[in-house]
Length: 86
Image (cartoon, rainbow, N blue to C red; front, side, top):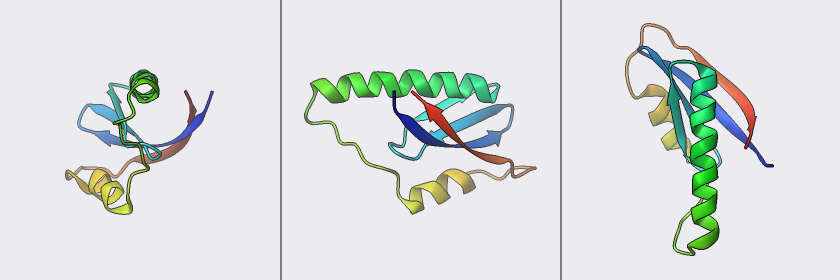
């Protein structure tokens, strides 16, 4: 089981979890739901990555991280960084 670095962003009515190692996103009404969706997406991606050599995999860039954090205006700037095992 690998661990991934995840940035959470609270948006209107939901949480978004962005994996910094591969750019995969999970979303849910709670942080735990977002993490569970992210884990499912990572597992699906890894299955495809193992079987298809044409899949590109790389960490997100600083520019992509800035875009994620600043994409929409929010009433509050709530972010969290967490290590997740998947």
